[in-house]
Image (cartoon, rainbow, N blue to C red; front, side, top):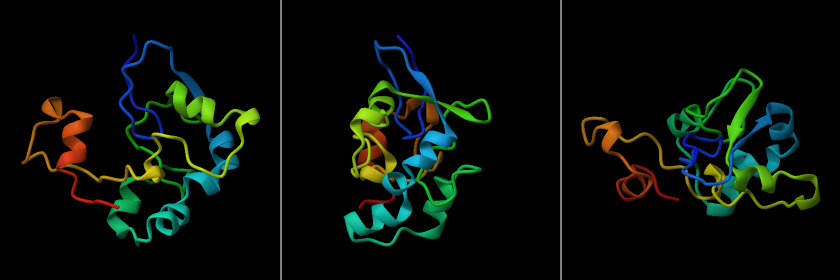
Length: 131
């Protein structure tokens, strides 16, 4: 079993091993991961501080997790996202668990709850931002 975060900001307790995905592949799918596609689909304008929270160096304009493990060019990626980026599955829709698929929840203030006590479900319930 593996644990970590992928560029979609998904905590990965999975039985299938995660893999790495390159920034080059993410750029090929930039439209699917973009701020513009999120705003268009959800009919909202994301606050600048939320956009900057999900901006990683080299991934400007995409909603990616800064907490994803990476080695500079490649990011740890959950099987769901990795399969979504496979060539045989080209789609205009974002990956199921991608930030740009309605999961832009922002940062939960540590004064509200300690990070070690925070679960993905709790994050969604107390999220400062909702699409």
